[in-house]
Image 1 (cartoon, helix red, strand yellow):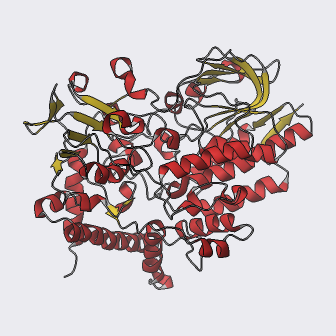
Image 2 (cartoon, one colour):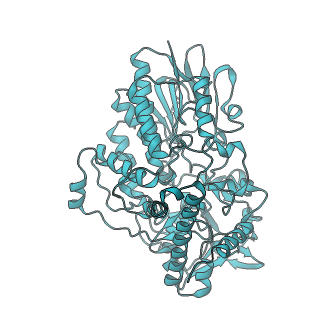
Image 3 (cartoon, one colour):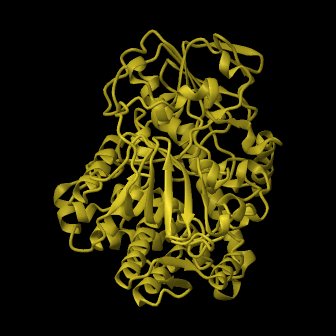
Length: 595
């Protein structure tokens, strides 16, 4: 039967309207005050130490992939005086904090886990679980000597440029006031846990925690997959059905007396097809340069490159290949923007119909299946892939509580109220995600004060302004490691970080070798880059026509601030080729070096 596209579009619009609310990102709470305990570190005791008042060549804020990759490249470049400042008790970033049951990467390990070739590590499965990824972060830290000068359980409070000495003053919550010639920041896009702003959230009398601070002392089990053996007599509620819930709900459904999953918007959940890595196969592919080839192949398949094969073969490359096939079927004279967008929409309709049909095929209860169907275009929210999530709703303990887009009405001392009905629970778990659309300095937890006392928060008041997503005028010797205004490859964030780390290491090495005290982007180069970026207004992510979520600023028009959170107009593959040529030339066009 032919798909009624107009009916699907109307359904998408109806579901979007249910989620729209005027408070946008303000609907969420930051865990402060009486809620601050949601940020406690359950993994590593805080060790006391004396404040640092010394000097380092490079200080990096953030000990996740960004800091590890940049630190590794700096060490390879012969720059050994590197200090990483990390608020957690060890390296790992999001993988240090997120140890909930079932946590694993949703992009194939071979392109997601960085420095595999350099460390000689073979991922144990196509989608590695959290403990293995955390262990790999620690492996990188040890191999490159990044533990030697690291400061853990330490949060930066301010970065201030000292123009007279051409260095940054770094102040932290541990009383540190040390200096660094260069600073770099990689705080990560999923950095600050958020809680839903539900009335009564502070009144709940049972046990509660955020998934990024999973409480195994209460649930039993451990991050490696041991059963949650203390929940057998517990009624558990989990609020949120995004990527985190998709991974941990199956584990909860197997052990709880009752599990209530409170859903505002269902996730799009496709097949994951995870499997162990065959060592003999891996030995065949792991020839010199293998991971870079895989990264480039994945990105070429994702971002319009001339890929003739698909090495990764996962849900992400399937999305892209379907679009290419639809557009490729058009005659050359038909490849107008309108026709190509229509072909993309047809591909999306086809895929989302498959995903909704999968729900019917897997979930036994028809009403539960109906409410688990995602009615939006696939890239309106981050696509999920899992082989046990939908199946979990066939277990007797699992109960989907769909709020029809409205969200939870309120929380009481004993439970959760939806549409006037109270669901009593012993434990409440918040799978409510992290701040994404808030200001960079708010998420960082500190501000930068650059040349002439100008703060980064003031300079970026109307949105980020950079060259390559790395350099900002007025903030010499400072670098940012993140996707926006560079490749903006959201399907595989580590590839963005890999290239930024390479670029920073080459620039710092050049500056030190030539005796330069400062490096800064020119005003002209930054303006030209921003003008180029603003020609890119046709991205597939973040459309205001999408169901609200962090991809589109919760459905609120953020104006220019949103428009500048884009990537290189010709796509991620073209950006990676461009930046490689830019740094390899040795000219560093657009940067000003000063002695």
